Image (cartoon, rainbow, N blue to C red; front, side, top):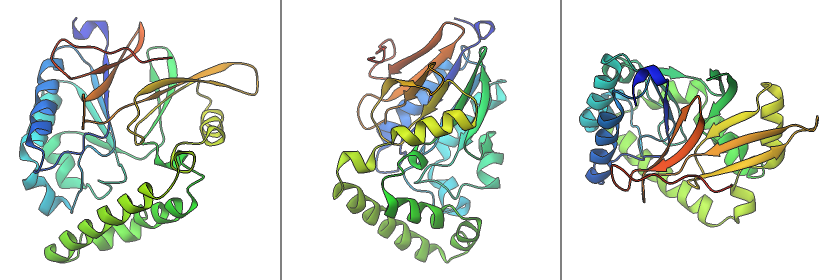
Length: 255
């Protein structure tokens, strides 16, 4: 496969951390293997398990950032959106990684089809307390304030936020924390799309949704990197969900 065949790579929820060097290595290896095959890479949030501000987190993730930069320098267009774990990435990160930060939702033309891309947590509308939390954390005011705190404070706050987020999720049923059909349909209609790609839920799959006009839409959910290392490849032939269990393994999504 060559770049002339037009392939785009989608990755989400890698949750890179110094505590999980094997995930960083697998991530870098995947980018290296795909470098001469893809024309674009979309990182759909939570690439990093926590982002403490560019001054703290860029040095912590030199290897992964260098791998992204190598890809960008080779001519691959690299885009990234914020997740609920890494929403304070800034200009130093973009300069050193060579990627462009985008605000979700992102509407793009994907091989003849208009697609809407997002992290996915905004679709979990039944989790009212989380949506309130998200609105505060993602606000421009909070982000500017957070990255100016002393480094020791930021480390403590990050640990507390991770603990709180875990407790919030573990104590709620799946029908509350999962994406909601109504939110998916509303987003597709608003952006006039029949294709959606997102992460966040960590449950790689392909879903079909019926729209009010009788047409159908496809929703691709990207998996996480705690297990197989899921990702998706889009081309003129469609979108295939794969995993990085080994360099030649691929796992088509279940309908």
